[in-house]
Image 1: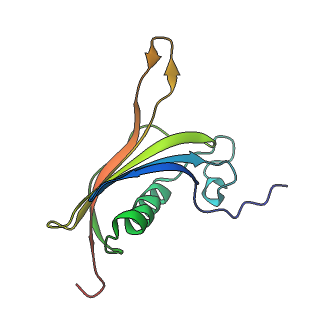
Image 2 (image 1 turned 180 degrees about the horizontal axis):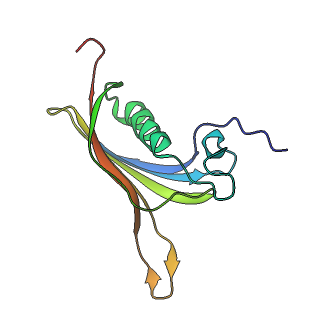
Length: 129
């Protein structure tokens, strides 16, 4: 039986600007969040995607870590074990809003295309605000 205790993906690369970061991640099959979601067809839970967005935004963009609300969230295509995905994060300091988008670039018959897995915006702030 495989022990699953890993919570974050493998960071393959990142590109950082002042209020923007783009991360290439490998969503390893041994991530704990796949366990039980779902037994015969594991997918990455939406709450995990939100958690990772906040985690990496804090690490690279130094955003506040208190979650204040969600808006305009869409989960369009499942993220499967061992996928390589891109997480794009944009921080609007004035509005205290973090926009995120998970995409991948699967090979197609016609060449490459982009698949949007999920996207949304969330309000962040400091504790006590």
